Image (cartoon, rainbow, N blue to C red):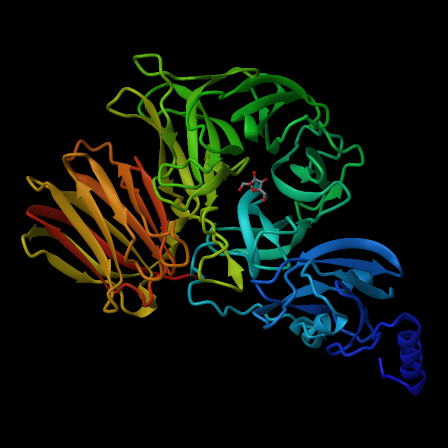
Length: 612
Ligand code: FRU
């Protein structure tokens, strides 16, 4: 707004009356009034689709109360810049067209005078703009893993497949690259490789922010929103954690909130509802994480709205070291048998095998009421892990995936350091989509197999290395990774260790960064050492060695490795284990060396990968 003589006089009059410097000196298209040591009004006076909010990650959150025509529309929490601007986040003004928008900003940083508040970097850089630039500015942004366009992401949520589209929602903060303002972000894909980003699907509302949950189609129209509707259940996180329902009539693009919410309440913390239609019993079942009680609760419903608690499972079983979160429950056939078993995914944080977050699971039976876990010969329930890296959490599956597939995806990070990793425009990627199966291991128990989804073969570009057979002795062998393409590749190989105690695979670059993987044939394990993998010092929990049981008896082992700009996923050839670890090499890895006393490597193939 142009400052006229009249408004200047008015401002001075106001100052004289209140003692406050009620002067405007904001960025373009905004007028800023400093009301007190922690209270500032920002009036939108110009035109533009977005108000760009300047963020400094080390700042404290400011509460930004958005008033539309004087009424409070919403409150968002933003780390408004104090001394320098790290990046901008867009506040979309499109929904407020024709309304007068004023932000009442309450900063949490103690200031003793209004003059100090005025010095904060954010005010002069507030700007209106018709565009928000989302082109990638990050060295470590993956090429082929799903990431948000900008801002923070944690758990995958509400995945369902419908009409040829894989829908993926996720815990998102649209206003910064650290956890806050939990919202369901939304992406979809037809090939599980290229993702289209959609506007936020479910935003914080009167009952709280929108925590994790699930979504399903409802072909029987049990909920009454039509046989084509998509129903989401999620945790409303307000003063307590309660479960809410939302429904969509446009294939999950936009959701309507059920006015009868919440649909489940409990006295203690419970979250991340995951529901599915139980064919055997002809009703809905739902698993809810009774987080602090370290157990999962099972409910049933005819209509997705009225839920009855049937049973609880887990107290004293498996890893109990952290909170239980993000459950999933489904039935799978056991390979090479006529049997099928139920799998209960139970993400825990902390308490993972290498510290922090991890996905444990139980195999057993479920009759619509009770989950009964398998036991070993001694009657004990074995603790099982779905992945043996440090960066695999909140894994859940897609509903109604084609061909009876059980396709899962996980958050490729760890609560120990997710907010500290060396990226800023965005934080966190998801793992590759994976297919789950079940198999009998030599110990007589049933375990989950994990293989990359078949669509991942579509990433293959050039076959850069193709070696049918080679003998590795003493000094070892080195093969170059595809130089172009930032070292992004897929590596396949079969290792016959012969009499070697160890076979060592080392990925490295000329900056001295290295990832060392050792197949220990005596222990029948594969270890992954990222202590010198590149940038590791942003958290004391990041440098680590992770170890997977190979179930190979120390004999031949096939491996499949997927390398992206900041992650390595290792799969045993048949999926007997998976291992997911982030890495931040200062330069891309350029070679793979293989060392052993005397081993044979067959079918070594390296593909450069690309996304069309
Ligand atoms: C797991 C989790 C969930 C919760 C969500 C909040 O990472 O803690 O239990 O719903 O994150 O963002």
